[in-house]
Length: 375
Ligand code: OGA
Ligand code: NI
View 1 (cartoon, rainbow, N blue to C red):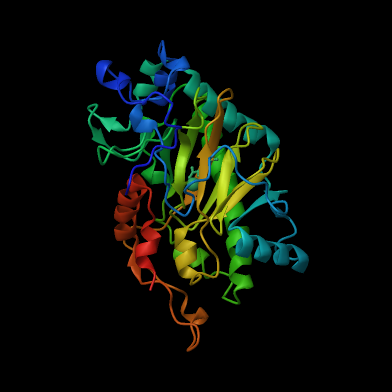
View 2 (tube, rainbow, N blue to C red; view 1 turned 135 degrees about the vertical axis):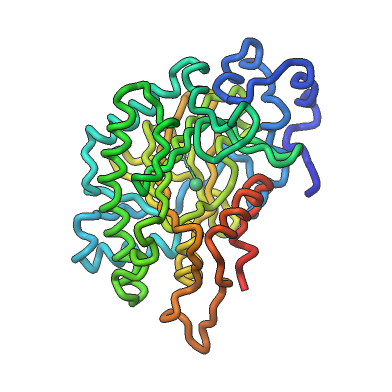
């Protein structure tokens, strides 16, 4: 890829500083480090020119407002109300994401899990490092606290830190890397996880009905060993939000993801027909988006949306994403009942393990593994 700086040529080149000083690998520490506040972010966080997914040339801070509001689905009505189901269909076909209200998670539980998450990130680095995603400070694992895996030297890193945990199946929880402080963290996350399951069930049953599939079609793909993971993203203010991204453009792996955002910082953007749109926040609702596995299984009728998070120069932001994945040994393919002579499979059959290996490779480069699976 040609590297074209987005900065005007008159800007000082953001290249030298970092070689001279040892660099903390966590964005929170970086941002807090003396001097960095007023200066350019280190080179490896700077987003150079042309981004993938057709978003090139559009400054991240100036995205379009949505032409119509993001659909808000009343989850309590979804199983029985045809109008609500029709709204879901439109939302999925137009955006791949939507908001849900009456989702059954009490406001107090949403606050509890968000407060515990924020309190975790507010702690000193030594406390958080106990849960590091770098084993012995070197070997990266997906689970734990930290930043992106560095796969290539010229990779652009995201201006955020995160805590990534397996929450299901329960016997797969690696409690040694679940934060012990704040003490409320574990219980809040367990409660939130268990209440969220119902949301996934209702939505996936409704989606199967929309496609005239057996209501349990998507739910049956999970079995009892399918992983559910949580990624708590902490976006740190950046003095130059025009140069970095909080989370680079990507689509999510998994079947479905739910997103809880802590306050009113609108930073999430979604790509449609080559244009980035701001996704507004909506207190007390949850944002739902489908992932790449659903795009494959629905033979592309439901598209996994490409999205990204822009940085902000003042406000912190925390979000909690819950991903419903599938067992590594499972193979997925477009549902047979959706295929006809004039509607052939548009995606290859793929084993989840192979998909996931490709996912991280592509993510680091800012491309999509899903594109390699299209026929
Ligand atoms: C993610 C994600 C969006 C956000 O965790 O995959 O896209 O707003 N998060 O934090
Ligand atoms: Ni995402």
